[in-house]
Length: 514
Ligand code: KIV
Ligand code: ZN
Image 1 (cartoon, rainbow, N blue to C red):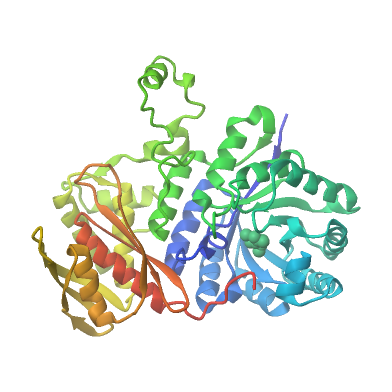
Image 2 (image 1 turned 45 degrees about the vertical axis):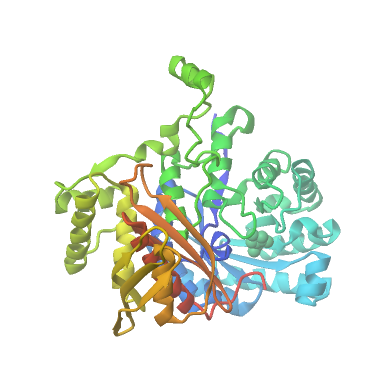
């Protein structure tokens, strides 16, 4: 007997990216979109095309590259945004326009300054207009869970009549609790006469740590058949519903949910790593499914049990969610073909010509310093190289530093700023401080350092590459820069320059949900 399917709608590249500091370049988004396709998500929300020319280009590039998933673009409920989404999605194998407008009394009055009747009319117009461009249209009443049910019924019935094919109910502020949220969706579906003409979806934020539980209640109690989620639960504030958790809950407890998800779960850990390496948002070690400790049994009793019979303490197998992907793949004897082949196997596109030569030279340099080169190292190398070739304003060249305990450290950093090659020196409270001060002496960004963190990219050994994340507060934005190198002082310089590049880019962006 074939089961009903649960649609997995990934919004890492749109709602996840709204998390302060998580903004990604077009190429980074494309890389993640390809991984989402390998993961076999049903829908990829690629961005908010009207937000900026950069966002438009990212949606367009993803729409053209992705063949196996529906590519979706968010739009406010107005013709300009919807036209921009339609244009970005032109050429997509399957495209979806997602339009939204706030419907809670608070948002309508304070944010939109519109009456309920005006919001109702605008939502109808928007869906009608979107349907003229695309057969697949999703409508979201923003802050839906805090909206008046009578008003929601009226507006949703109208947008379904206008042709909305998916109705998504967001818990925008993460206020819901599972029993109430499930019943809320069920009541709406029961009260709206044409509710069976659309697929129902849930979109939960995690402010109370309940996003996954609420989404699952939306499915079991409410009858929703689409869940909106992000890799690692990335998203503003406490984040969104986490993809890996809902997917593994539905898979592991098929007996209860009785639904099929089409995800290739072995791609979960590679996707998690890619998102955290790209955005600089580290995954907490005890995070379900993708945390470093998720399958580590430290206590003697547990280890003994797992060795005798795995399911004494394990409900999922690490390899089923992709942990085995963390293999030693290349070393200093590996040649150009091996590098090219491994990049292709893990879904990364190897550059051509001189760009490949440069990448191979960097790979050899790394393999000389570090005997084992992991997939994560390759991802970091490729991302470093693609930044170098993207002609970003700031580019790291080299550094020298001296530290003696009990004395202030000194550093000189050589880097490129536009056309100029700079060589500033500075002192600091330790090597990293001296390096960042030297860069800042020339860059004069005035940005405030909000976060500095170091992680080992692959194994926990001291030979592993250090991955540094630096979060900066500029005048109008927060950005994260990530840098990797076996020497964490060098990684710090790269991360700082990467953050400065992000501060310079994308200043023209309109935030979603305004
Ligand atoms: O949280 C929210 O309300 C949203 C909508 C735009 C779907 O992200
Ligand atoms: Zn959201």
